[in-house]
Length: 466
Image 1 (tube, rainbow, N blue to C red):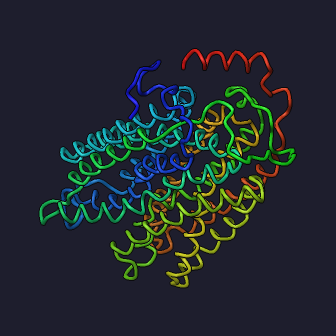
Image 2 (cartoon, rainbow, N blue to C red):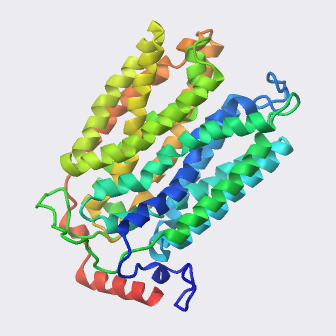
Image 3 (tube, one colour):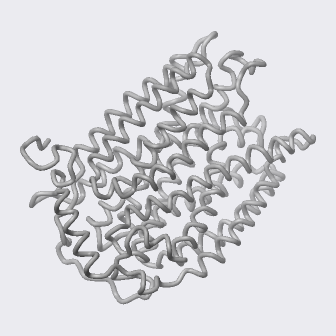
């Protein structure tokens, strides 16, 4: 750990500049230390059913919480993920990844501890505040903290770099889902479900790993390029100019990509947040709670693998073409899901959702490189933070579509196994909108490019902060 003298202390960006001989391959593990921890958000659905039985234990009591109420925990967290990434995006860019990662660690652990207290006093609003608000802020700051750093370390493979940065977030549930079920089993009893103690243990473990990531991470020196670097070929959809963070908001490209990401995210996040409960209800007697937890973990694995695979593929076929694949294939698969349920095909259902979740994750890992192509590298982290407000919106739309349409259908005597069909067709329709918006994306107009005087002023400000 570097504890010597230097402006701004150990947390300052200047103290994280890599020294000669530092390997850029040390940065992906640092990113994974953070993203594997905050990726637990995708496994939160394993707590939903147990938290409907905190009082009744074996079955829900009248005063227990409903699934629709618990669904808002995940939605609030995703909402604040987008808000915090937008609000703190420039601070993360200027302050550097170490400060951001440590801040995220404190907020993430604090969110779990507050939620544990909320469980102990059976107050859902405390959990909304803990995991939802404070945890959501941790998600936003932690999520964007390594992205621009890895893009700068890997200018030769920006798609692969963002895939490495973000695949851990998709894979976090692969660890968290079985770990959470195991911990609840250890702490649970005939009179207690073990959720509170599980939250406390997760807070401690995640804090330690995230701090380790903040210690490892480094940023490259100014104008650093890897040995043997060759600039990419001319491409009208890959800009060599930078766009100032707030000027990006004035471009149609930003908002078109915003809609594309929102569509892709809404379609995936609704089912991901309720994957455990949905699979059990669509296939009663065939998928047990333990099998459902395994499905959540398997989806997490494809979420993680898709982030790396699709983003790496985008380096070869282009970011825009990659999203065309998402929109077309997503439309087809969501139309097929109700058919798999009607046919009682668990394998078909699982296969559809594994591919869908791989594209859901791939959308997140590909979009930073898409933004880099459109707006340059200078402010890509901050612009990425602003774009993640699309995730906030999707965090509301997706679970609401799944939970409330299901509840409406069940209330009108639709069998639970068929209660999700309407939502699946709505999701398919969203992909048509996304396809059109992606088709309209063109190169950013030159009037939005940063001028030499602004670039020089910006560089001077950064040097002063360092």
